[in-house]
Image (cartoon, rainbow, N blue to C red):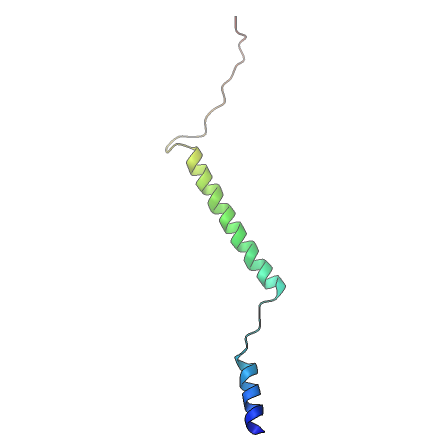
Amino acid sequence: MRGAVIMAALALGACESEPSFDERYDTAQETIEAKAKALDAELEQATLPHGEDEPEEEKDDQPRS
């Protein structure tokens, strides 16, 4: 009988509680935000040549003849 009680206590002590919904949500949100920032930075580097600023828009104020 004592052995069963000790085994049950050990089994309960070995179990870890799972993270709550809020903890899982916060972790997922942080991961998503980090990936989004990394993608934004990667896209920004890919669209701009090294050492150049953003391209200026062409101004077409003069009417063509």
